[in-house]
Length: 171
Image (cartoon, rainbow, N blue to C red; front, side, top):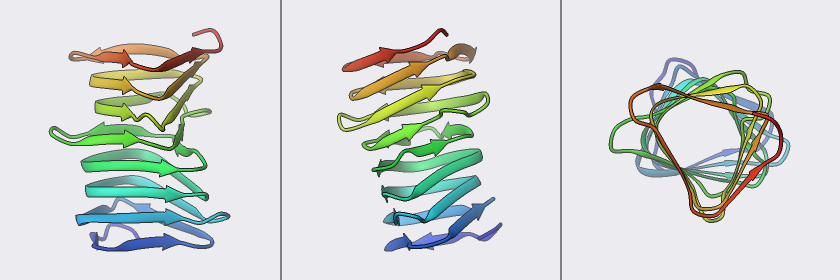
């Protein structure tokens, strides 16, 4: 799918191969599920997720370019969601992780808006720099920093740890 609005009112199942969302407005109205099966890949490149989107599965899901969250998005993937891009959560919306997220190996990433790592969530920040732009991160699960540098870029930024923060490497 490229440059085509896509409305999903049910379940999108990525069962084999690679599905690419490129410069796409993916709208869940009012809510939808994306399931990525083992061995399958979902690549979300320079796209916007709107509505209430639940992403789950044991396959590979990753973001590249810029991911814009214009709704309430919850991830609950068993294998890590690979965040390799800038993440912008628009006003009044949220990105919540109840599964596994990894930024390991990603170059510099800009975070804008609120992100919550839920009680069942594991969020791994590995290597390079994270720039914050009016960003909040609330950890209620497990959060790991490995060889990472955090930097205020613009606005008011806040990280809150309510559970486990593991630091394993210089930053």
